[in-house]
Image (tube, rainbow, N blue to C red):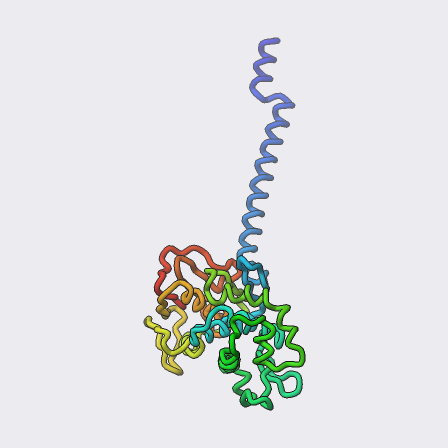
Length: 305
């Protein structure tokens, strides 16, 4: 009997062993449920993720980080683009950024103090031009740089002194406080630091593709010498195929990253979905992730889709 009892107990059919088996089955079932719930939650997270971050841009360089909204990002890229067209040094761009931050927070304001207008709050009464053209970021930036380069020794002057000579504001000393932020923006948007500007927005804020319009506006900012190829048409009024693309030819990495930053910051306005350059890739569907690796992205062209 003793032998039989030991064999029965060893077979796992006793009360204690049966309880352990039921415990193991319960644990296994619970694990399956947890895994399924986790998989479901992850699937829901992936679907909701494009909506979680809202809308915005960010610059992240060795100088630091700066959050921007889409308008500020687009205007920042435009300032750098006009500087490229005019072949100006980075110091000129820093002065322009510090001025625009003080005057408008880099926004294209419809009005301001007295008759001040636009991103640099230029005044028609001071001879800057008519209000409609001063509300155009490309035109107002061009006018600012045209005046800045006439300031004798502006590259060697204190920033606030150079800016005030151009702006003729009430208190030019205020420009000095934005010099560090100007340097940060210049590092990103002039392309000196690669892939440091990103923008994102939820699917509900995406717009229809207007790539021909985007390319024409880009060339207006960077200059007509900007070479653009690819199957997508560039003529005014041409239909825009979101699955097609254009290639902007560049001669160096810095110019390429300036063009890429312009495309990313203007993506929402023109319905652009992807930008590729120099082994990196930005996608509107995952804009908050910024620039990810893409070995197929060439160094001589910025691909815009």
